[in-house]
Image (cartoon, rainbow, N blue to C red; front, side, top):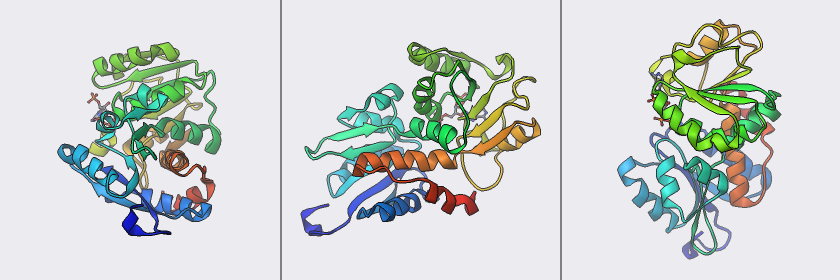
Length: 281
Ligand code: ATR
């Protein structure tokens, strides 16, 4: 809120990304605000990579008190803020920025807690002692690796089109648990308990070719992407007769709830929002 807004004006938040036009975040944060009685507005800011730093700083010094950050700016956001939470420092990626009272910027990453909460609490998919295959080694996987490893999983295998990227990521997180890396063709069995897709292959209508025996009827498959209907990954998972096939709507809502809690000090209930989004899934 700026002085010019006067008392009672809504606090300003928003999402910085490119593209952002189809984001559900204004709807989600609008529902959280109404349910908790918080007076906020939430806007979309479509920023090109070359203007992200300048524009984000301009927004955060002219009335905006918090930003969510999405593709492709999460790593740039980690470099922009004054301080990182431990989980954002681990990920070297930021999806939530908070302007603090002393005018410094705090960067957090709520993607991992969003995924873990959706899997365990909303979907009832246990993580402890499970073998997990993560597809991809980009920003999406970087954000969730730490929180997944902290759930006492037995093993995480990161498989990526470019194996060297997966190996770099695995080395960064090895102190948190058993994490190894390989190319898609080098994945070895037995079938995994959970496969999480964090590649953007679906956007191109592609699905990496995985060796036979990666999935069986006990494997749950989760696509971090969300949208209406099937993705290339969910279609593939159904064809493999996976036990569960889920998309990232719950992760989206849970990461938003954790961001809202950081900003407003209140953790909103997510079930009403998940129910409201159900017709659009
Ligand atoms: P994001 O921040 O969304 O993760 P990113 O950092 O560009 O974006 O990472 C995209 C991920 O999707 C990478 O793991 C990428 O593989 P590479 O590291 O080999 O580039 C993966 N990816 C993109 N298109 C793919 C495709 N057609 N098949 C398989 N993997 C793909």
